[in-house]
Amino acid sequence: MLHYIIKRLLLMIPTLFGVAVLIFLLLRVVPGDVVEARYMSQGSQFTSQDLMNIERKKLGLDQPLWKQFTSWMGGVLRLDFGLSMWTGSPITEEIKLRFALSLQLAVMATVVATLLAIPLGILAAVKQDTWIDYAVRVFSIAGLAMPSFWLGILMILVMLIVFKWLPPMVFTPFWVDPWENLAQLIWPALAVGYRYSAVATRMMRSAMLEVLREDYIRTARAKGLWLKLILTRHAMKNAMLPVLTVIGLEFAFLMGGLVVTEQVFNLNGLGMLFVEAISQRDYTLTQALVLIVAAVFIFVNFATDIAYAWLDPRIRYR
Image (cartoon, rainbow, N blue to C red; front, top):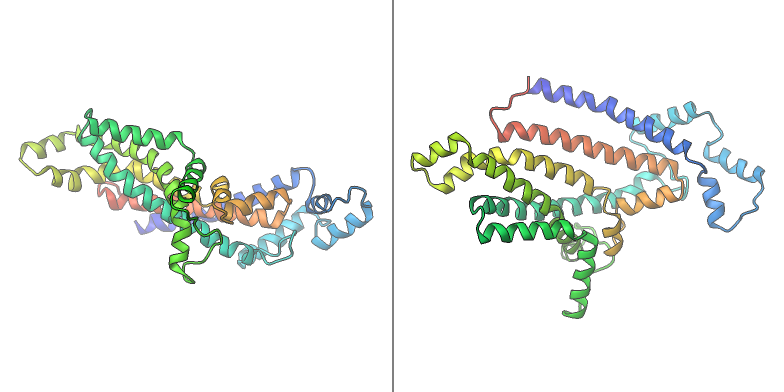
């Protein structure tokens, strides 16, 4: 097991390097750069080419691509992503607060989704083809049909019209004011978590139905074991493997894929920062964001694989 963990950790290095090379080249292939975007935003359509070349030289865009990449990778190895080409601020400071917001929202949404998906999926499988099963299936299908941002808009309208109250629209870190922080993030977490739980609920139901038809489950029932003991000790762990995969992938996606939901709840997370960086052609900020999200995906996949062995003792990595 230790050999497998070390091997997977070492494989992260070439994977991240490949992501860095790919995003660096793709950004340079796209027409336009941060200098053109900056002057267009100011309405300067007739700026002289010499002035734009001077600005590109200040940002190092006149250097060969290999030299730009080497300089950027040297900073990444020191955990220094450099300065934003648009604002001139350190990228670490630009990302730090937004990363904390997105991470907390992803964790809260994952907790909500897990608390909904696992018990509902087990209940639907145990009560297959009864009104309980049909109710859970309708609940999950409704979650798949409703976008999280639309559900968020409904939440805000209900709170405003019925309770005459709106959640705080300015992000407060948890360590500054926990109550203010939860009052703002609990609503997007519920909206995203419900949408997220719909997929996991259906997966949990399907996996549990398959496990309940296995011979060892029928043997346990024939021996007179309690149904609760059969579900918790024998069936649930085996059924959790595909569900764990879905939960892990969705968690990684939530770190940078909630652009519209963040806009609805006025959250300035990684999703919104992604959109701003790309629209402004901010090469260094976009490269840092892609690299961070890729690292999150890789780490979540690694943690999921390790959790497989904990859930199912039959799995051994050699």
